[in-house]
Length: 420
Ligand SMILES: Cc1ncc(COP(=O)(O)O)c(C=O)c1O
Image 1 (cartoon, rainbow, N blue to C red):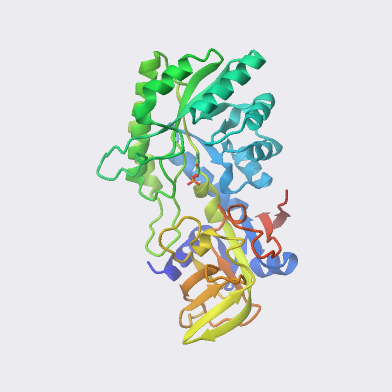
Image 2: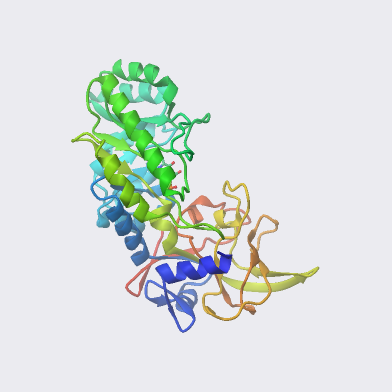
């Protein structure tokens, strides 16, 4: 599938196109650009709801969903997933405050993260939190001291960095040195440390094996391994765990050749896993990207069109300072193009491929290297799809001091401006 084919498939799956123009949440993209200016991020609430509902259906009878707030921490976005019935997974006190502002009840909040500070733990515990995922011996000591000072027993889950088990030949999980959680090999020491803490109650296990997994078989194998590990921990501590959190990591197609995660295969695989879960144990998955990513569109306007030594550069008013991931600089090994299109010219024939770049004074600020667009003029709109997760809050917004983009959640024809 070419980049243009992927863009067309994503449009067909998620969005309405009327007379060659993309509509987001029932509003034409040109109207959003006119009213709110460019560059902007627009999130289609209906697409978020659909992604959530599809996943919920696939996981029915197996796992509950906690939205991973880091993917898109806007309070109305968190509120949308809570309204759909999700819990949340947070990894900082800022995310905790956002989740509470969105209406999350304490018991719906899982608090992960490899370096939680004492003040963060104290605030979350004082405000109420479901489970805290312990990730270091220091954290165990810190939490025990907080529990002792309060005269309270705190519910904790153990985050484990799994061994590189190979199941079905395609297991891409853990096994590497990592700052996240405790190595599976060190379980004896960790369980002993926890057992020595009268104010900590080990109620859960948490695994997060990796992000952007598109292969249903790999995910199912990872989940199976997590459940087996939970049984082992439960046996060692002589009681049942109330929660097993299998992590996020459900991928979405970004690049030419990516195939969407096969939810039918997931749905077909989960009953066998569900049969291994003891009654009374709640299984959780905590995806971010899968729920928020497809709903977001980054909309920019063309500022200049340059030709340099045979190559055409479309210089836009948006770039890596708002959307680092699309520029290929957010941890990608190989830089490839996100799906990019001219959202008011859908269906127009493509001109020869162009590069789409931003306004920053660095070649890193390239959003598309070989993009099939119609021949566009200055002020035309350019859009990057799959932009609802790890967008502005995962980008170096201060770099070159350009203004922040507008962010909108659009539902039923009504845009809501997102802000702090
Ligand atoms: C602990 C934890 N949970 C959930 C997520 C969400 O991952 P994704 O957006 O790939 O589902 C992350 C991402 O880094 C994470 O670290």
